[in-house]
Image (cartoon, rainbow, N blue to C red; front, side, top):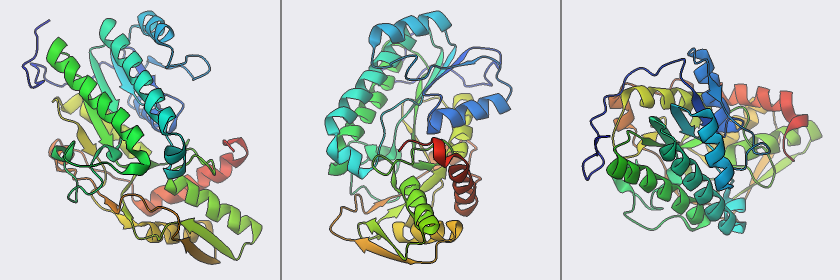
Length: 329
């Protein structure tokens, strides 16, 4: 194979993926992975493979190598990760660092060993410095200190980006990385102790509505600004990037606009029909004051988000209510 140049550029020209080729979605039952599977099925892919965590522990290197050798995927989306909100990241930083690095190293090494031609690694916008200039462009990576409440997870994801870049330099493979903003949608984690802010708010306000509570208390001041992307839009962007983008630098995936946590809480309260008061516990951490991604690079490739925040929230609330009895407690 022709080796790439030292900056990770390849001679590869992106084109439409073969719908009949084997496509391995690592993490296919999760929020992101399940959305990618839905998108691929809708686009006519006929050989999508994946394993649940009980079937394949991605932290088990030998098992991962054996599985990738068996299925021989042409394409791979690495959407598997240990994820959680501020509380989980603050309480279990070792788990978030160790588990995610092991998952990434095992899957990426196995993919290289067994000839995966096109791969996309999915990270997180938390890779960027806490006080990065807003909106955050891709060049902000490694230019400042990380947010302390999730720095272990961020370091793991940064390691994944570097791994992909190293594969491009050493082996010339046209692998890419994408960094989504805050995601939400069906199959999210609505656990009261391990979820991100948006599903946590949906659950809290829905339970308050059903229980007739006259007040809800949220963490922090509500002043931080966040950008939210429906996971079906992310899945669309993943396929778009695989068919239209090649380069060593990670690509931001978002909407290009943000709202305060107070504003998102008000929207969710309205969607679920909650009419009580909302209180804010300022003794709890806010996290990064603002995290809005610059999505010009993605826009220049011809993609933009389509699902509005209110539309996405309404469908997510409907999904949550339909599956509440099955969700993780």
